[in-house]
Image 1 (cartoon, helix red, strand yellow):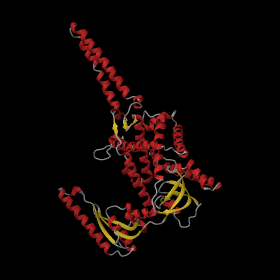
Image 2: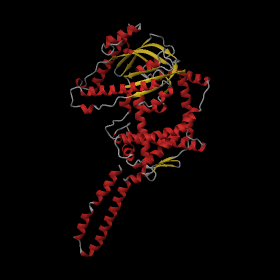
Image 3: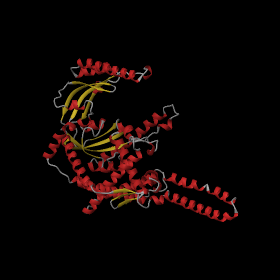
Image 4: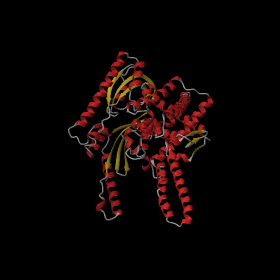
Length: 520
């Protein structure tokens, strides 16, 4: 944006020689005045060009204020650092916790964020800028409250900060950058420097550490936790059911002379799908009946007996058949029909449990295979890509096996935690791979099944491939913890308390942008 402004200023100046040429053709009496005007115009153009270059320079992005929260000021370079930091955190969250929705929750990485729409009125860049503003307001409030209360970061927290700073240096070297500033310019904006990174990271670590300190000191009685569970049990309970969808026949728009005819045909197809689902539902009296009915409707999609079976916490149930499943009067083998825009769902209720099983504490080491770019093999039909993927997976297996053997040389939780910190690709590596109070959905696939096997004993360890995560997992079982439903209720109480506290902290805080915000 700012570069374009500079270019327009420069373009204005190229017209000056024409004016000077015209001036030389005018009367001699006017020539002196015209020459003075020409010189003045050139001088103005030079000043404007100089200003444009200065405005677009890295230096000015490190000066002045782009965004101010109370008395704390952030330069364009500093704001841009926070912008990208929040963006990368969001991307990591999506890929870690909501990967199946990544194509919906993330923008197109092949296009600039300022040309993609987040919603009808906001681009993705504007969205992340607004999100960054909210985060900075919150972080400043936490930082100032912590400083006023005399809070100090622990030695472990300071060490994590130092480790991240040093890790960024190591990443820059590993990726072949001649100095860390060039690496930072690539990932955090052209004006970001090592000093800016260290200062702003320390600010964030302090704010987060104070928030963590406050949260750790929140405690609720068993009665309060139980009351919260009773209030939210429709969200916390687990629901097991089977379902399939009877699709309406698609209509070909080209076969109809008017929109009304096409709409009528679609409505007829939906009614026929509902009637078909209704006939099937009348003959469903057992789980096997449900399996057979789904398979009769679509043998390929429902070839496996468990292809219609689902088990979700109530909070994950949608609005289509969720309220029906959550109805306290619902009985096993009840069958319901639910119309949607593409057909009719046939749903069978099986069970509802209170999710009172014990959570598990564990530690994990995650080893991801090296990424193989399919674009490098676009013109290859010899199977080289598949071979490269297989080789990367085999290298990851060997690495995981080596780490497992190193653990077995000293089979203690402390050694496992150290190995995780130094080698794991998991997002919890900095915490020694710790999974605290894990529920059954925390680890999916084989790792999760192993962790919740009734035969599990503290100290058990196993290496396995996770098809869902596309990585090798080494899992160390620590032991049981509080019931999962009580964990959810306790977590909600803490979240509510934290939100109220942070809302109180940010109440009255003022934030404003300056003209330099456009340079961010």
